[in-house]
Length: 98
Image 1: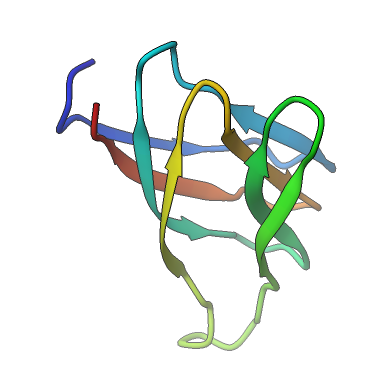
Image 2: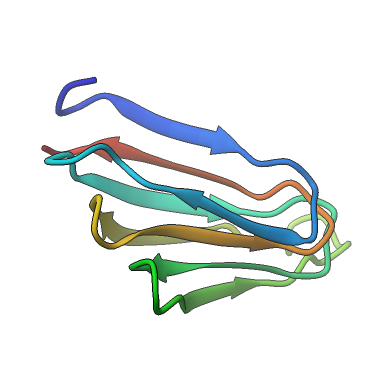
């Protein structure tokens, strides 16, 4: 991959943490995060020791009230993306910036 490439994923529906760790010397800017049919999703940074939740997503059954987080979260091989999914399929998208 090179700078400018799109990075995205839809994660499995498990009650567990999922990680996205870029390769060494790669930087990614996560720009959006959403959940699907779930009561709880969280997104944040981790460094192998200290996970930190930045945003929580609670699913709303009302169409039009399903919030998508638009954020700017830069991740590297040292400080990487962590997502917790309660029962739904969270997703994220961004671009490689370095």
